Structure formats: C-alpha cells, structure tokens
Image 1: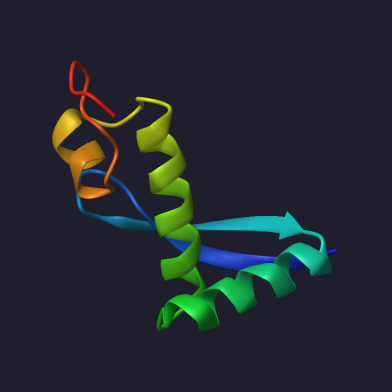
Image 2: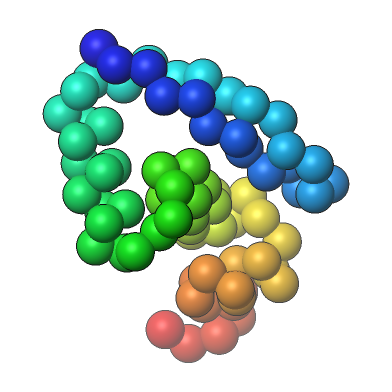
Length: 77
C-alpha cells in the first residue's frame, strides 16, 4: 500500500490535508488519469473525481452539480 496526502478543499474555501492509504495499482491509475487530464497535481485529479461522484450522488447543491455536468433535478437527460 502506498500513501498519498491530499489537500482537500472544504466547501468554505479552506483547504485541509487528508492522508489516505491506497494500493499502489490505484495510485498508478490516478497518475495515469492525471497525465491524461493534464492536471497539475494528483490532488487536483482526486478532487475532481471525488466531487464529480458526490455531485452524481446528489450530495452537492444543484449549482455545483451543474458545474460538473450533472443533469439538474427535473431536467431531461
């Protein structure tokens, strides 16, 4: 298992650091996605993946869901 430390942006706009343990294969996959997306940091990649999933699961406000391309409630897909 590898460890990555990620500054996670809290909705108030302040960052806090979060350390997570992930299998090396997953870290390698994150690095591949980072390169394909041209994200400057691994943290940026993880943040987008996490926020996108939270938006899909309706844990974020409609305005933020829209920013991630998630259809708004009541709109056709």
